[in-house]
Image: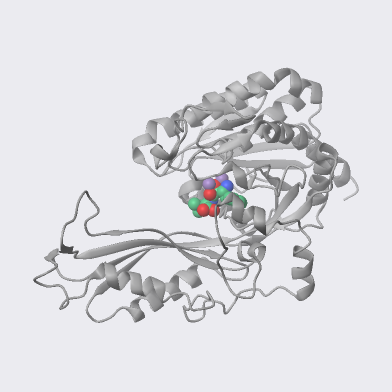
Length: 455
Ligand code: BES
Ligand code: MN
Ligand code: MN
């Protein structure tokens, strides 16, 4: 298997780069045809790798690519999930090379989607090809690759609910997360949930001269900034009443266990050019980005931002706000608490509207399952180092839904690194990581089949 990967690595990389050339930005309707072309590309590659019944399952949005290889009903079935859509590449001017013209530099591929998730998803297609070529597929496999992960997976949710039988499987396998480092492999054991809202603050009914009116009417931008600032206290706790009511508090033992995963704060600061970190009092940086909930402004706008200066009091101000959730918070509960609070702190001089966007529930995946243990053995063999479980701060809302609707646990076998800069300019994916992923995945299948036998 290893030889096959080495012999074919140039082709694997070229195929990935061809896919990276298609700008499949799901958030922006301008790229609609490209997103659809990417679905076709994935379909064609799954077929070529040897999958049966490959089809584009139409949804109210972008299609889901499905394919399968059923070798023997007595064997366990692995359902592979990934996404072919990518984040917008903006701001383009911060890229060292165009985001949709992949280049290889310093043993990394640079392009939007190189890691999240085209590169990681494609490892599964190539690992499957390798197993098929060796007549060594030890499990049944189903692929479900969607095109709307970066916009909340709402149509996939419907698809999952309506296709219970089609998606029957023993485990869900996903590579859409990261690991601590190439010499400190880790397996993601949890993801945060999400509540995402957009707020609109309206002051006067039109934009006003800031001299004639300034001082006498509410400036919605000033007010919005005050409202946002008030949502964290001096200890960086979130001030929304009841926000922490259901938050799962970890025991000292659990926190101690977590702290054993290697983490270098100085390197962390250095890599982000920070003079200091910032966050909730009483928690470490690792804890702040995994087991604690957050509230962040993702964008804020209003008024005049063009060249020069314009003296104006805008009629409206806006912000997009995300809250990352941890076990036992729910997106519905938190969206409701946010909305109520946001309205309650608005002064009488403005009107506010809160529009909920997508949400998703947090999830913790078991580390004592056969599937997790098989993944751990696969990493240990491929990397020569035992992987540690790490809870991640990111969100993949469909993972909680898989558990809730299908009753199936996921194994989050990520191979990305923080330095891959997903969602940022100059996203990249190490060639080492891409190939290591292709090597590790068949080992998972092998150990999972073996270890499931006694079940
Ligand atoms: N692959 C990421 C999720 C991720 C990132 C998990 C880093 C672990 C570590 C995924 O594509 C993503 O970006 N998800 C969104 C959520 C979605 C609802 C837009 C996120 O986390 O912001
Ligand atoms: Mn992703
Ligand atoms: Mn993403």
